[in-house]
Image (cartoon, rainbow, N blue to C red; front, top):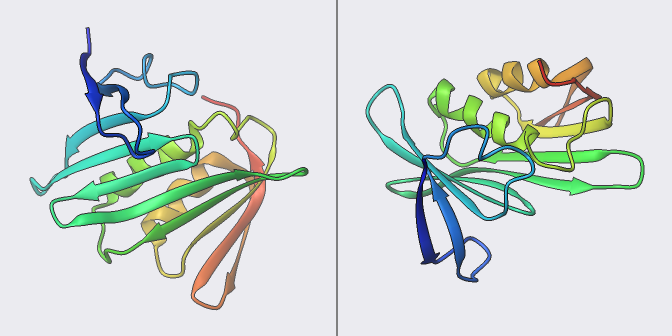
Length: 153
């Protein structure tokens, strides 16, 4: 059974139930927001993913390292990935993308636009695993990926 921390400060500023180190069946897209998921990068650095209704924030010892904001539009869903730390460990970036694509708005076969930093090739590879018919193009300092959300495997 996952550990639960009650009345801990959340990313929304309101107190509520926060799940810690919960298994995937508990942290799936229908889980209650906000959630807190803790882990360690392969190099031993601790990280924490904070999820809420607007997306996912990746926190480290020095503060916010990256985030993925999820917004529903009439004809598509937009996932805006922002990273402040170059050289984000690949497994941590992969977990950020995984949690962003587990958001309830990101449903199978739905048109999606993903915005990510140009040069974030490890994150781009993870995004392409979740987007069918992915078409990527550079737009200034960002990379835009369009396609449809893949069905869960």
